[in-house]
Length: 212
Image 1 (cartoon, helix red, strand yellow):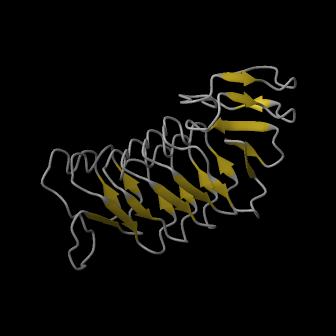
Image 2: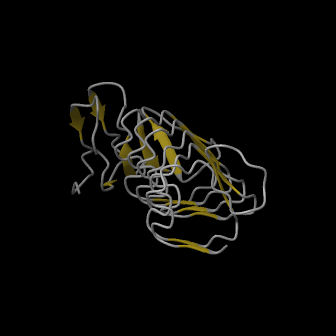
């Protein structure tokens, strides 16, 4: 299987198992083969899927394939290089994610709307980070970034680039009413302050010339 069309199983509310290979049945499980290269919009809308597993050897987490599903857990193989735009958007039951060291690119809005997400571990080799990756993740207060990652920095409830000249995002559930931007910051990414739950006051770095 290399292509899955838009709305292929949309409206099939009784579906709880989707397999694209000859494997033993497990309820509520989606197993995604490494051969899948394209995916239309919402192919599994309304299916009763709570867990997703990508076949070892997969190099991309495609947009749409799990978007909006009720998954509570995912297993991302250590071969994955790219997580595409909006890949896990509106997976409102997803609570934790581990991005392995193989991941190099995370697209815009990759986890947008994952309102139950509280635990994120980011591997050492991410080199490209999209806008609003955690937008509307109302429960996410902090993330853990591998100490060997030179491209991303986590500090005081926010994600920055490696030398902290770019603010990517203040996390929605960051604790505390006051956020003081480090003076190293020169640029602010789109959605950096999107839907903050607790932060009410922001002091912007004197080096910032424009706020998107």
